[in-house]
Image (cartoon, rainbow, N blue to C red):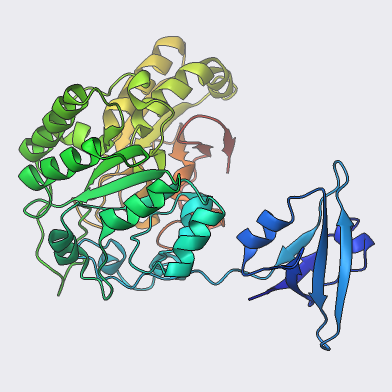
Length: 423
């Protein structure tokens, strides 16, 4: 129960006290430090004592006094994330092909990452001491993959080695003031229809501190050999889900239940207005992305037009299937304002993962390379969400490889139009 210091920033408070990499932080103000969250929690005071252990086994205590605009400067070694012990029938990671980036195969189920980064947890690996810590340190909100309030059905879907009474755990945490964002991955034939309706009734009638409930359709790739046979949603099924959500939002006078954008696209529904999504509580779950993209485009349109007019070229903007209505609308608005230039839109089909996958963030380099045929006078506009933070696509192509594939310039635009730049 300690953390090892990996690096100490130059000219930081820690450096001025002679703290060096390799030392171990045992406690802060006599509170044992288990991980990065403990460390941040206990060092938030104006003054605190660090108990340190040197690599040679020597202990010492350093008193730190905070100074304005001067960081503490201690960077701990990477945290060992808690992994998932379930075998969910709908797990997306289980249906990915081999030889992609190694980070794509990690199955995290860690309540600290849920709190810090909005990752969804299943509650099945929480120990008694974890629950005590969550309540004592008020680690809230938590993002929880619930799927159903029926424990037997939940176990059928999640196939957990440690099934739990999910609603019981949520109730215990809720009584301590912990809030929740809940996720329901909806699988036709399992937790849709009457099962979904019962779940939503249970949640909306409960006294839990629920901030949002996101309902997303199961994502099915073509790499499902040997896995449980599942069905994807069609337009009719999507329509039923949307109607159910609308009815229950009205019945309970509640605005916390949200459908994923994919349901709207499947059913051919218009995108709800901005106030429908409040503060976009489940944006990373694909809920409200299309609306936010439109809203941000409107605020950035003038600046974007200025950028496009700098070069005497036409443009080719790519789109996923799910986003095509929005991208077409954006392209039309830009074309109405451009005098001697035009923007053409091309949909990229997801041949890599299969036809059921239709979102922009899962477009691969291989599909771009095979399908994208720009005219010689066109600048290619790509969404930067096809790259990770290291500048790699899902199938491992870096930006240099992408840039070298076509002779055309490539303009990368943030999916919410917050920024853009040429590759």
